[in-house]
Length: 308
Image 1 (tube, rainbow, N blue to C red):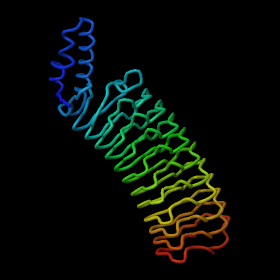
Image 2: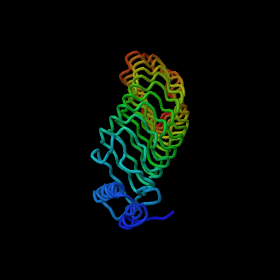
Image 3: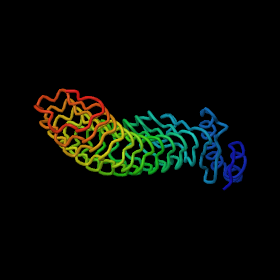
Image 4: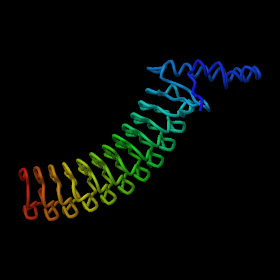
């Protein structure tokens, strides 16, 4: 594969051959060359950009796309590899990720793109975080990267109904919090190295499909339609919270062991602590549970204190 800096690119290869074509063809090529040059000039580190066969734009640093760069709601050029971050967040006209780089060494950010309906075209490998949060038209995660190093964030996607297509392993955090149309965790990653959050998913009735390995915190708080904790990992390495799950009547299915704090506070329909973890390394918080009349069933071993 031949790699060209932009000044080489416009004087040879595709552009050199254009000089031997018709005037109209030359004008089209010149116009495209000018568009690429203008785009490169707007980048913070234009010297980091190089072009490979097929007129693919790459960068040893970062790429930023703004709404004014888009062409008919799509990315203006085809991108190959970006070693830093690729940022196309806050583009209200963006409808597609077709042409996005397939490998990003840093972060890939397409959050706050209300017209984006699909993640098809996303990079398949992201070294940092992948953020598609607050994309109100996104209904599915199909096409999402399958390898993410730091975090995968699809929170505040109000139309998201399924996690199918999500990466199955996340090196850091996975958050699908505040997705009110999400009814199932089926498709969620099975291994999350740090935190997992489905906080505020008000249509979620079950935690079946949850990751079975979570390296730090597990949050399913404010899931007001949740009726069972079955499906959660049986060991959580730091904090577990199912607070303000107002439809939860039992703790059956809760993790057997929680290394940090456990909170079921403000679970107004909770009538029993049966099913509580056997061991909690920090505090056990069952405050503001007005239907709870007894502490029977609470953990046998608590490293902190019972808060009630």
